[in-house]
Image 1 (cartoon, rainbow, N blue to C red):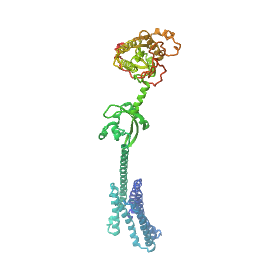
Image 2 (image 1 turned 135 degrees about the vertical axis):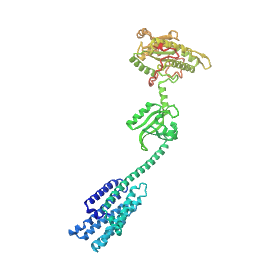
Image 3 (image 1 turned 60 degrees about the vertical axis):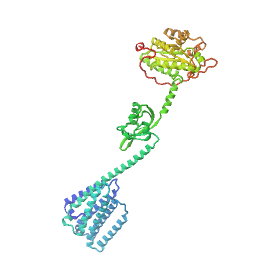
Image 4 (image 1 turned 180 degrees about the vertical axis):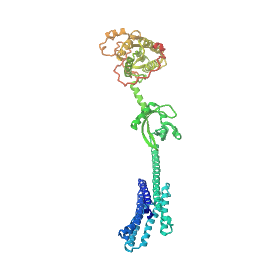
Length: 597
């Protein structure tokens, strides 16, 4: 391809050399990380050697004048051109679309060429054959590389190969014309042909590099698509509900069959759902998002959710992490339904703090919760009162109508007391037929009004025996307040003392423990006269009283032996958070906001 006219002018030589340098930079870039990178490097070596061979032809006369044998110079020139042909052939073998092991063939041809060079340059010294080989070696190399480029031009990404095929085919035709002597002189001697071919090949190689990058991306896309399909199959076959949602807009990308059933999703309208739509508690979702931002992965996180068509919440155990899915940052979440477990936890918690017969709070919860309430009331300067309620002659009810009817009495009494008082108050079963109430922001005078109206309401309750006989029952109530003490044990003792006085004064009445009673109480005047009185709670030391309290939990199955009551220490139970206050009124008892103030 190259001609000695390039070296006749320094400008032509410099331009051709710059074009060759451009080709070199293009080769360095385009040959990296592609399959035919080695072939591209071989191509540049072959073209560079062909350029050097032309330089030998230009300098030959100078070296001959220096005394160097022309046969030796011709041998060196042809050897360089033979190497150029060999590298172009190797390049073509790397670029060919069909993998053919043609290295032995190239080696055989190169060996024959070397033998011919030695014979015609050093032995036979045939100048015509030497001139012929000067044209055959480049022609063979470019014909081979042109064929390899054309073999790749049928692929999807073929622009670079097509340009390379046109350029190398043009060079091949030019060399054939030179060989046959039919090329016009002005074409064969144009010095810039080499520079144009070098630059054209550089552009072709860059396009080939870009095409390979697009092909690589396409292969990656296909691989990712296959990978995603495998993931989808795994997710769909998972026994757990799984949802993948886009992190940017929270829209659902994928939901398996179990998730569709669990959340009531329409599978054909998946993208109209957002993951946040299923959260029943906004704070719960905010906490989950905060955990994900900090840790990128959350395991066994309890969330309260709802379906897309209903408002009934249920509990799930969620494990979530952030993943790359279809070029999107997505949230992968797997769920496990733990509603039954949470229901059991609530049941166990209620069993721990509530009485099994009346469903009221039990003694331990009352004492611990009221202690907290009293501390808050002291900080705010508020007042409070405690009522101790006892069913009158409850033993006679059990003896006359049986324990099942006695249970009905306790249930009606507790239900009436709970409905009559506010949600901010606390009603608890303290033991047997005894109940205790905490009234928030209520002083002793208002507490006496509440107690009297509660007593009157209870006295109107009608209970039916097993044989359908109606009867009523009454209660006695003792009242103590914040004027007496801020200690729960002291409040219960003093309220019980007032209750004991109500029993002595005829039952079905209310008594208030006053400051005057407190002095007598400390002096021991109101305590029952028994040896163990100073050690036992007044509830368990009422001499001669047939209505002493039974144990917690025995209200459901009263055990009476020889008409005596069984007493023992009741077990402890865990506490529960205070319930929120509602409107400050007593609906059943009829106390309005003015009374409460």
